[in-house]
Image (cartoon, rainbow, N blue to C red; front, side):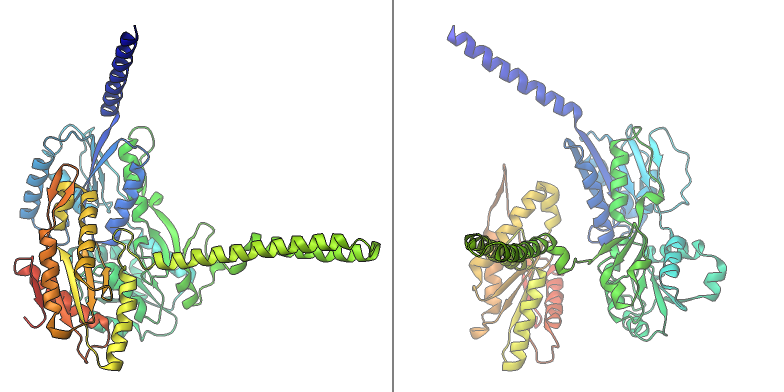
Length: 558
């Protein structure tokens, strides 16, 4: 009898497990998003961040992400290869829908109708110029820049006498932004009120914006390539311009916040991604989004203070960054409780002294309460101090590898550089980049990629001295500062580090693989004005190592 009961229990568990597996298979969704730009661009990163946030609402959803990278590869031949790649990769994957983000990806997907048949297509062009006859399996949702709205917000909040529009027409994206901006603004504004700074070399542009007339403003339309032919990430270009400018910089994109842009009425990439994700998840259950849904007012408090713009002039819905509360606002409860306790203590002391001097034990009781309160305040202060110390450490530590992060690397590097200048010492910088790291992520997943990066950090600890500065300064990019240059051992260390990583076998689930890296080496020179000069040469050496076959060490003397 007992054996029969056990058999029934086991059979019931197996049936329940099989049913849950079937339900999960039936309810899971697979959604592909094709992005137009490189995953390195802050705008593209904010799109993906918002899209994944939307996907989090449905735990069983599987998200696939691809990047057309249209700025670097605009040719039809490349797009044909990309289409063949998608066909091969997703031929055995059952997708529920595919999302195309921004105009290049939309045009690519519309052109390749044979891709992903019998599933719903969502087109999110950043333009209102797309016209096409759509089938029942296609949805066109244009969400694009409101240049006039952003421009008018600049006029409302700052009212400049002189307006300078910074742009480039040498890149596909820059040319597109400039053309659409001119189409959006009234001709009277374009002819009378605006000075265009287009296709300027960055050095010349930085110098010019540092000497603008009083009460000027800059409207930034993205720079992908300057007049000298140098390529830029628009966020980095905005940083260069904002740092040098003697006038506030306004723009159209929320992804530029933090670069020195003041803000304005901005298109949020994160909101666009979130809207795209919700459209794919809940098609037919809620209205399709509009351009207005992706806009909001954003301002940087530091830049408002820098240019004397009053926060009282901002709209109530404005989102502020770098808006840190005052000391009182941070500890309002503790301060008020302390003041209340002290007030009660004084009042009670007066009452007790008037009523009866013999009741001093009440004073002693209050004194005890005060001591306890002071002890708690002291303990709380210590706790807050420990939290502050931990927060400062976390702010300088890479969460994944526990190495120094980019901020700590430059802080420590600046100190070492200053000591080298003062005491006439030398140092070397190693810049390391994992070869073909994207293939690891694509083949084994991002979790496997994280394991590989941790293993590289472990190899660095094992191969370098504890006094050497080791840091992760980018996605798969690491760096080290070597201060012991005796016996010409820098290249030996670098080669040992490279060889050690190559020998490492990385195991992830049922897979084993290895990675290699390329290393660029550069040495401090008395002519270097800062650690960035040495790092730039090390980066060039790394670039040479990549260009000559990868998995090797090259220094600047090679």
